[in-house]
Image (cartoon, rainbow, N blue to C red; front, side, top):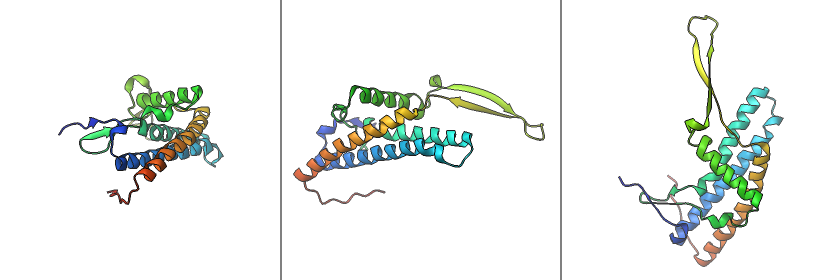
Length: 183
């Protein structure tokens, strides 16, 4: 089986562009929700360690969802595409820096779990019977900070507006009456 070939977004037919933009909007919105919940975890009535674990998991989910439209996605068995850089063109310098940081985090730790990016701390846990020690590892890598997650929410709002504007323009020029099979 051949690997899908990269195709520029602007070379896709309008219905495929519209579907891709709709999925991208959904990913951006879900990233914003995950970031918001990661910031809200401190309000839960849970032990601090559990709050930290949940916040890290949600931060990782936010980064992965945020980055997904900017990474190559298979749109068929033979083609893949990603959002063009023009959608990030109106970001401020600080927002562009954060966008690049999220892409780096996604590539280095959250999605690929690159061994070189992680610090592994091995330790033994002695169960009550003390006969069968358990070896486990704590993996440390960089997660998005609260400030970065707040920045993600602002960028996500900006990107959603830009994506939605293009979606609306596409729908006006190419009125579509289509149903998509989501299976």
